[in-house]
Length: 314
Length: 325
Image (tube, rainbow over all chains, first blue to last red; front, top):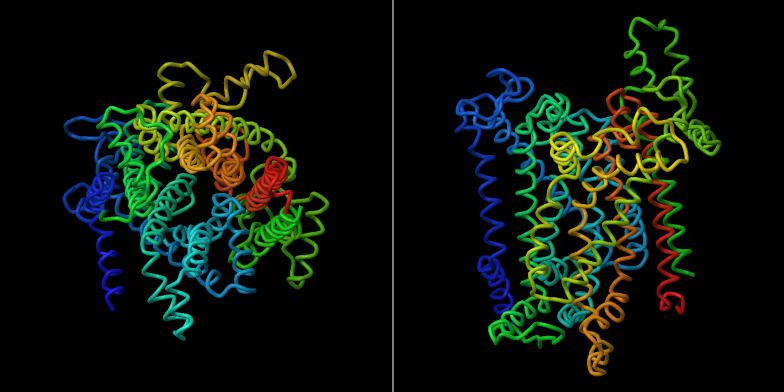
């Protein structure tokens, strides 16, 4: 019982460690800002993002803070409205990609034998077939829209997570506490959900984050290609229309820059959180960061000396 | 050897899966290329022509299995059907014009990114905690978070349009005819600078960080301690002992990354109207040219599979341990 308590304390400790990490704080704050923008932004900006509000390709001014598009729409309103769809599709798809990857990977890893062989084989096939061209071919036949894009991204994206989680499960399965559970005759499902899954929280989280990064990037790429509903306002379609209206040839950089910077900031924030998770869960990285700091504080050059890894709390 | 053979089966299956996917998707979905073509030339085609078009695209009333064998048969004869966008050109001919350019662009970009990224990774590890190690990774991660094609658009705007330093579209000047001359090659290289730079910038961070983390792992190995104890110089240890061995895992990553780089180069090509597969792909999408779209998917898949096979062989050649087993 006491070991279970300790384990749960360690898990809640993980969230605290994450909040104390500087990278994670910056990342989480940025993501929250964008989520708030997606949720409430369209309510605060009174301009309809697809309405014709002024002359086309107006540079940023006091009237149009980020200028107008080639069709005379307000770029600021479009960027804010685009956040809603793009982030919703991104996060939902990211979650689905992670969940399906986890299901396949963990099933393969836990059951082993022919189940593992078959599932791993399919995982490897999907890993090797290039995602974007496959997504284009599938999406071109389906009804365009955010749901289609999400679906296509799940089909082309789940394999990476499946492989990661499978290998993690294989290493956990050899651990003593899982062995003990098997020997004491606990059910397979119980072992997976009660014993193994809690120990994979950080990996599932970072899987979710990288799947979301992939989903947002690929979604913007597909919509830029014109696959997807070009009449909805998303970050991808904003760039599609900018390119369609020859924005750069006419020098209208303001139709391209805001959306691109938003996409990159969201991606960057997510990657930062992922690095923080990595630092917290990987003792070698953590020890190294501390070691470098110690050496620096003594004016020593950090070189080839390797720090000794101690259990946390010492 | 067994490693290669096992992967060979995987690649063969992947190739079969993608061509079967190509066959099934259009037949399971509503609508067909013939109707799309008919709609495109509305008014110019007689209603009877639609049946002929269906025949030409291989959509018949035959049982699915028979259609499948016809399809595979045609495929092995190098017949991917007719293109709608470039009607009446054959899909294979259209693709043949684009494949070379794509391979050139993404090949050059991936080699530069791999080389430069790995080198930066080694240098960053060499001077751990130094300015390169602390400044470059976040900057590269931030740049890598931009979509490839967006970076391409920015380069086009700043270096191509504002400073007019490099040509902004096509693979070579319209005034030149393709020839094996110094003038033409120089022209092609000039046209390649912007698109290749966009791809390199977007993918550099991944290579550098990968190399850095593998290096950190390798540095904990005993033979590095041994080399230190022998009093070898830091430079020698880094480049001759650690980097060589850290490069191996990156070689497998190289194969995996090809797919991503190719996807990135497809989108970049569109920005620069670079006449490769990506540019053809968007033509196909805009014209609902399904045959061309599928043809491009198939050739890209085969290219990635082939490249991965090469990497596998290279890996066995580089790493004696895989041969011993």
